[in-house]
Image 1 (cartoon, rainbow, N blue to C red):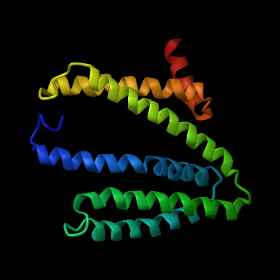
Image 2: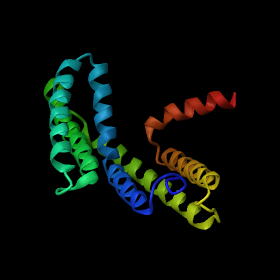
Image 3: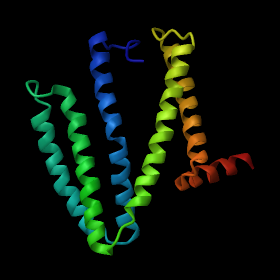
Length: 182
């Protein structure tokens, strides 16, 4: 998609590097968003909101520091985001534990591990399809087709593996799919 537009080959490589680094932060982002919903559901959101404000200030500082050309350049942005989500996930878990007592971290780790297995299977499926199919990514229409075919296959494998691994959170997706079947 990038090559079909105004991006040069070097631009594509630098943007792809940024996206690769951001992918590493997705599990931490997921935990932090889970904590957001947890604090909202127990109606004790103010401490989480204060923590978030402090972390956003740190994130902005990391953007200013890490994204300087002499430090990391554009790669500093995803590293700052990963730091924000990592600290947010860890500190919000600590905060939640102080508020409610014991937290069953084992179940969170088990679901995380199962999700990672499903994500890796999804990634390899998408890569395999994009490697095997004879698409021509120079043309914009073919690039969109590559994204759709590879992405949909990856999503299908993720949901299938998640169902096989009995990830409870997938019940929401199963309910939505059941509605469409009817």
